[in-house]
Length: 91
Image 1 (cartoon, rainbow, N blue to C red):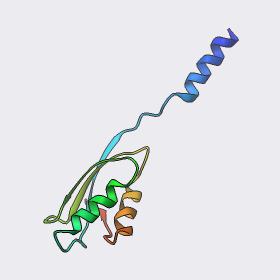
Image 2: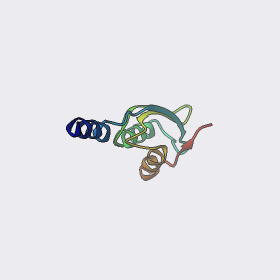
Image 3: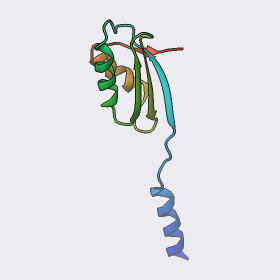
Image 4: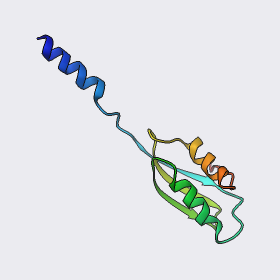
């Protein structure tokens, strides 16, 4: 019985936490030329947990799909700011 209980406890401790995929739209007003979206997309793609990025120059926005266990919106906005393009969540 002790072995069974120990096995159940071990399974409960090492069971993975299931991530939820999230999507956020970031406003990136500092994009001023057609090359800017390439830099923004590259910066966001380097963030661990990002699975998809769509950057639209005309709308000055980036739609990012990410694993909310591996990253956060704050890390995404930090990545664009570090690349020279401050961003904020579009509401």
